[in-house]
Image (cartoon, rainbow, N blue to C red; front, side, top):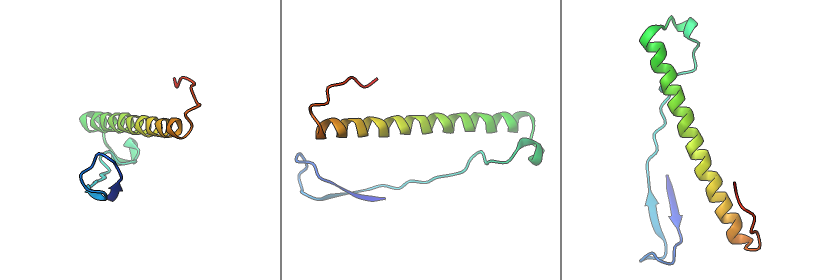
Length: 83
């Protein structure tokens, strides 16, 4: 992942930020009955899915917050409260 960030506070005009993102399918999408999973494996899969859902919700909230801040910067007359 490569991007440029234009920030007047930066020392150099076009600093390059690099990052690495690894996506891993931890829980899979198989049905428990088809994989003969049960007991602890089934609970582990459910917990992983719950954690992934929480992570997705958090990322969506960050994106929404960034979009709202961008919209307010572009349109300063917008004074409505974001709930």
